[in-house]
Image 1 (tube, one colour):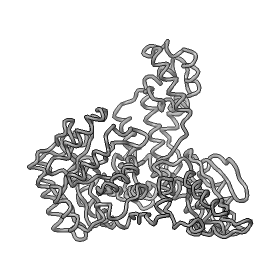
Image 2 (cartoon, one colour):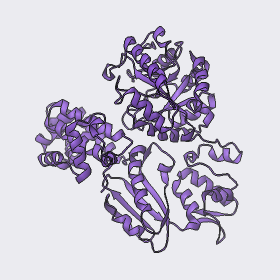
Image 3 (cartoon, helix red, strand yellow):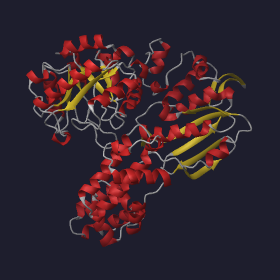
Length: 574
C-alpha cells in the first residue's frame, strides 16, 4: 500500500499525543510534532525520495532516528514505537485531545479517574455530572466539555486541499493503469480548488470489459467498501477520506463532469436556464424530450443554455453566470504565468535550505526571480535577522547573483508589524532592500478598530511593499483576525502597495472573496509560496487555484511580470 506524507504525519502526531498523555520528555514530543508538520507540508512524497536514494535527514526536523521511522512506515505501513504505545493506552483515547479544552493532563485524569476512553464515554460522563467531581475541573468546565463534544460530533471531517491531493493523485495513477480505462478526472470541490475537501468524486470513461470497478474496491488503501455496483462504487480509505467512483459513458462525460463538479448552487442555476429553454439537464446529458442533444463535453452543456464554458473554480453562483452571459468572464491566471516568487526563507532564519539551494530550486521550477524575505529580529522563535545579519545576507545575495544565471535573487525581509503599527526594523535598514513584506505575527485578538489601524499605520511606512498573509488565518487551526479588509485594500490602493496571496496550503490567504475585492479596487496581488524549503515552490499551484477562485487574471497578479517591470512597480512603493 502506498504510504503518503499525510499518513506518516498522522502516525507521528499520534505518537506525540500518546507520549504527551504519558508525560514524556517535552523535547521528544516536540520533535515528533515538528516532524509531523514538516512532512505534512512537504510537497514531494517521502517514499519517492527514499526510492531515489535521498538522505531524509536533509529534510527539516528529521534526524537519524526519525528518518529510520519514516523508512519503517514507508516499508511496512506501521511503526513499532506506536504499536507499543497503543498497547499501553486504549486506541481511542487520543481522540479526546481533539476536543477543545482538553489537554494531555486532563485526558490523563479522565482516563485514570473515570476510565473515559472514547468521545462517547466523555459525553456520558459530562452529561451525568461526573466530570465536575474531578480536581481541576468543576461545573463550568464540565458544561464547556459537553458543548465541545456536541460540536465535535456534529462536524463532518474535511481534508485540506493539499492533503486530499496526495490521495487523489495516487488514485488517478492507479486507475489509469487499469486495462480499458481512458479518462480519469477528480470532480467535486477538489476540482473547484476549495481549500478543504469533504470527499473525492472521481469520474472515469472505460471500455465495457474494463475491470475498473472490481480493482477500485480492492485498492490497497481502501478500509471499507460502502457500496459497489457495475458503474458506481463508494469506499472509505484508511485515512478516513471517502471516495466515490463513477464510470460514465463517453457521450455523457461532459454532463457528468459538470454535474459532479458542482457547486450545487451553480448547477441549480444552470438547470433553471435549461428549463427555460425547454431542455432537461442532468448527469446523463442535455435532452430535448427524449433526445440527447449535448453532454459529451462541458462546453456543449454550457452552449445549450447560451453560455460560454465557465472554469470550475468560478462555479459557486457568485456572479459567474451573469458575467458569462454578458461576456465578462475573466481569463484566469495560470501557474505558467508566474515569473517569480516574492516570499521565501532560508536556513538563515526558520527555513531549511541554503540561499544557493533555494535559488537553484526556484530556477528548476521555472521561476526567473526569487525574493529572499527572512523574518525580522522580533520573531525570535524563527531566529529573525537583526540589521547586521540582514546586511550580511544582502552581501551574500550580491555574490550569488554575480555567479548564477537564469535566476535573480531579490533582497527583502518579512518584517514584523508591531502592535502600534511600527515596523520591527528602522527605515534606513529597510531602504537598502528591493522589497519589504509586512506581517502580523502577534496580538491576533486586538479589536477590529485597533487591528485595522495597526496595519494601516504599518502600510504608511515609506518602504512598505507588501502585506503578508493579510487575514492571519490558519485553515482549521486559527480563525482570521478581525480586521476591516475593505479599508486595508483601499489603503493599499492609495499607498500603491500590494497584498499577498500566501500559497501555503495551511494558509491560502487572501480568501477568495478578498481576492475578488482587491481586483475590483485595482490592487495587485502577489501569489507567493512562503517557501521554507526547496520543495515548497510546488505549493504555488494551490495559490493559483485560490487566485482563480477569486477571479484574478494575469494582470491582477504582481509576480506575473518580468523582472524589469516588477522592479519599476516595486520602486513606486518606496
